[in-house]
Length: 465
Image (cartoon, rainbow, N blue to C red):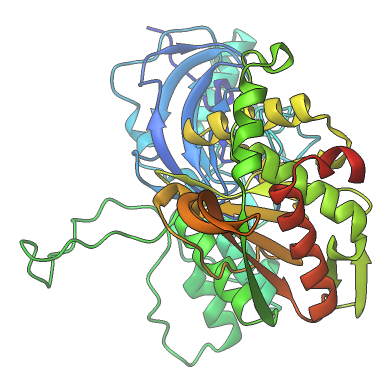
């Protein structure tokens, strides 16, 4: 059996699958140790604070080691899978000297080179990587490496070791960030970790040597599950992470940053419901999703055209109101992983059939859990349809960075005064929340009234558009 060298092992690191995200949870592995993989093959699915994403491997080889089990949250930049690219077969059990080294301790031989795109974010470095044992400030070639070099040279004795060279201090990405935050030069820190790796304790000691450091190391380790301190037969506790954690943080930030105002209007949408049924029979909409949400979305786009200042955002740093000349229409969607708000890009330029198609694709993708981070960025105004749950209305919280959000209540048959007589009509209640820093009561009221007027008389879609 051919012995695999470190140079034949490629480390695939957790990429930044969003904009500025620092971690992701491994949801599922699609490969196991010993499996052959090819360039572009999806090896795992991960969940970030924004979405679930499938990660393809960027080279051919045989899986040598999966660095983390499913359910583990991994920092961006840490190695998650090791692949032997030498063409040989991987042994059933990884070599002890490799398995014993934590994945986060792997250092690249040189500064990162240009990244190759994977699926989203950036990929791995173009060149291969290898581990280097480090015993001090200088690194020399080990006896094992000399033996390999000797074999390659075809001589019975090892080739002379190259002259010692200065190396970049070894430290994991979180430790490097800690050192940067504390203003510590890693070159001046004495390492205490295995193979000369600088630990968090070493960085803290460099700042205040006299103070004992009690913080636990961050190297990945298998620890037993904590013993519950509550009655498991009466309570279930669910860790807050991924999409739910990001949503909670965003809503807290929005609620305590933007001064919310909510206005309500109850409207007769009988004619809108009749138009929905007519469009379902229209050949132009064959195979497309046609429902009240489609006409509500179109009504919002027309109302924005009549009240363009509603489509804006607040720039706190510059103290400016930013008017948007495009509409990225967000649609709040409930998924098994939590509430997400993907948006339809440039919705203002779409025809009604195009808008219907975009809505259908958005909903299907969200239900399958395949919404990309890009699809949830850059929204300008949002619709949340609480009516599908039988709720009359609500006071929605603004999506961060947006000036308004419209909640649509349940459409119900109710007694209504129509043409001087009480008749059963299809009625709903709309609730508009807006940022009172840039949308005053007049603008908010005009916009909401326009949406209601269009839904009451949908022919206005033709005359106002």
